[in-house]
Length: 245
Image (cartoon, rainbow, N blue to C red):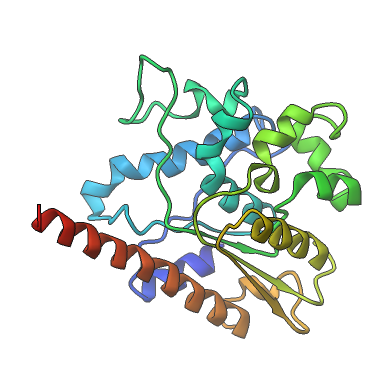
């Protein structure tokens, strides 16, 4: 994703290519991978003054497993309502400035949308399809029937509606993550009245979508511009309301 981050930076976007503990790393998988990504998002509150970041225009973009995590970041506020005993809903997520000692729960950074590039956005479906030879089992520590509570807290599909715009971009020639995953998620999101856009790219494979010189990336930039523009419109509206009160 470094190439994509560099491309975003040249276009004038503040881009942060975050890393996290993965399956096989000490502390990776459940719940460390999720805690790392959550902490990184919340840490933007600390970075914002130094880099003049507008936190009303934050949009995560992720590819494949990262596409899952991008949408999961948007889903985080829903976790306490569907899996209140999950470690992902507790104080372990982030010791950020928004930490509330009385309730011992963090306030996740509000996002203006999320973009998934060929993302594994439905972990239960990915488990049933046995994607990447059981990668979801390795991530969550078991199958859906073994640790259903982990799937509820970790899968964007299980946390619908997310309440923010979501864009799913997927190529028809993807041999790693089937179109079915994004299609099923889009159908479920629409049924939940979530603002979701599904873009299917003919002849595009799993890695074309992260080629900064590809037409697929140009489409991603267009989607990002719309999401960031919505944040700007919301900010302007809030300023007008503030000025009129």
